[in-house]
Image (cartoon, rainbow, N blue to C red):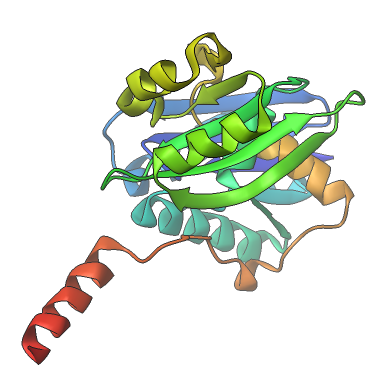
Length: 238
């Protein structure tokens, strides 16, 4: 089965083509570029270099949040457009789950940390069982890092952290957990479209697809613009 992976939930923009157990092509950029400018050219280049045909893919897997509101909208719009144009289903892949899937087989706690600004993170808790099956110990949520630490301390054992929230909160994590705090190396420390596609294949085989017209990102909290509007309305009411 062949699947396209699209990742744009944070600073990283990434597109990949995965066929069965092989990554045919992947283009990943971790730089301050606008996803609307980079994502489609990256996808086009990945498909072209792999000498592929978009019409032969079985599905499009998209990183569905949590993450940047703008980034998620761009990724969702790109995936929806492809799905509708090609007549292919979409696979909604939680962003933090795809990040954890990059650490396949890890038996420790896996804790993706995405910097959500305002002192908060987007996160989730995962691990793998003895058969290599990924287990979701806690679904994605937005919260204070201290809540994350409390959850990890309650479960005990080592935890592997990854994501752009790590540089922001690393000192706090190390102070709280000591040697039980582990940190993923660079090649698996950020979002990757190949991980979105690989986990998307697992979900595709389980029949977990969504019609392109129905796909919606999971934001977990309201946008900054919505918060500011609400504050203005409250101020006007006073």
